[in-house]
Image (cartoon, rainbow, N blue to C red; front, top):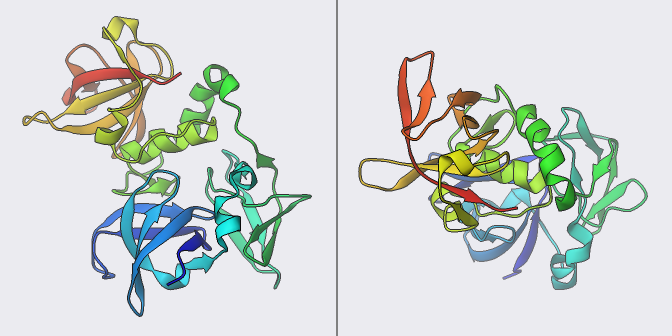
Length: 259
């Protein structure tokens, strides 16, 4: 079984079970690397390289690459920008429209490569710079305003709460895990909400104490998060207050800092 693969389409669903009816747990974006763990005729179980997430997907949505191509970390630095018109052309001249944060493997002189297949990159590529995090995080997060909420989503056409903060961080050169409960295990604890600052992540739990939601702090009193859509709401020591509903919708658990 060939182990090393890269996502070859704009966005591919990653499912809980090997069935088109199964729940989507995440998505692969163009250029995401995966290891093949198991394979049937149509389906394969994969583990993502960037956040070690597992799920089932349609094997036709993957491109096989060599071990050398897969493990060449220096060749996966370029990604698509936070803009609406990221485009690739394949060698037949057909267009791929990419969401922000897609990887452009082996980018050079306006082209990227999946295995032997070459794609013309029609829009500027980005090498994220973590040193610009504080100056760019607000603008980057607000790019996704009004993107609809989608369980498992990672694009501006549908994104979930943890996919949203993970994508914003990726666009700024920081790699965090996929799910809110996993992200909450990273970073450094901020002792009080009053000490929170732009770019921190706030986590929220349910009645059982399980972390079920995450958002990105714009200040110590406002947060941008994906709930129904990507939106900005006030936050205090109780949690997120939704003025439209006239009530608190998420109960604050902790705030973490990654930068």
